[in-house]
Picture 1 (tube, rainbow, N blue to C red):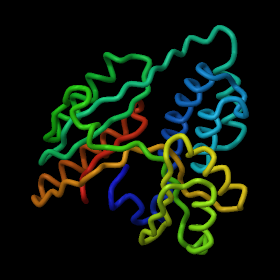
Picture 2 (picture 1 turned 180 degrees about the vertical axis):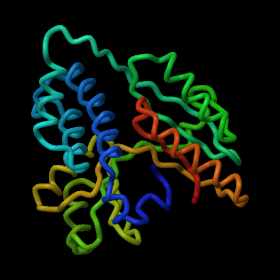
Picture 3 (picture 1 turned 90 degrees about the horizontal axis):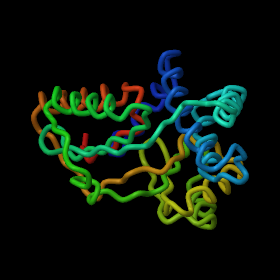
Picture 4 (picture 1 turned 180 degrees about the horizontal axis):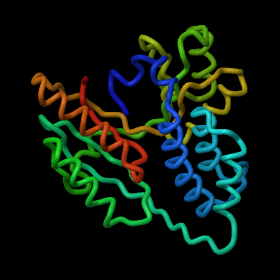
Length: 240
């Protein structure tokens, strides 16, 4: 999720439970399947697949598991037909929310997303109602303890990054979407261990929630939305 609190408590984020790892693999498997169907099973010829594989590896998904999903997706007679659908809406206090899904049943997914918005004080909106206030950027995160700031800044800019932002626990590197793969690969080749790397929806401005109960509902909305198997990413402009 985008927002100022994304990289707080990195140690806690690393200690994922088996159930969380399994859910991550389920989501990444769907993304891999779609990438293979659209661009083929060879990462060298399919940049999007190459990016998803890198994301899976950063999430500690074993290489053998990734290989099996690619083989399954490229096998004959497969009937797994997933499609990407984006939903937009508002959380409590008008927080803008974008929900990126990958589903084999859009009726089920739409109903689930609408129910979660409604249950936690938000509402599902029309396409385009909030996406105008977000900008797609590649975001690459390197843990502070893993790199020298000046060297990383120079390497990132030389590779084609557009911005660099030191945070409390990480260095965040921003790229234009078209430059994301090249920058990620260049940093990996330099030996940097990437904590996370993906294309994100970055809010142009943030919305604060001052009421404690509204804040709790907003956090619950995000947590439950991200738990849904069909949901790949949730972006928002809540300044938590």
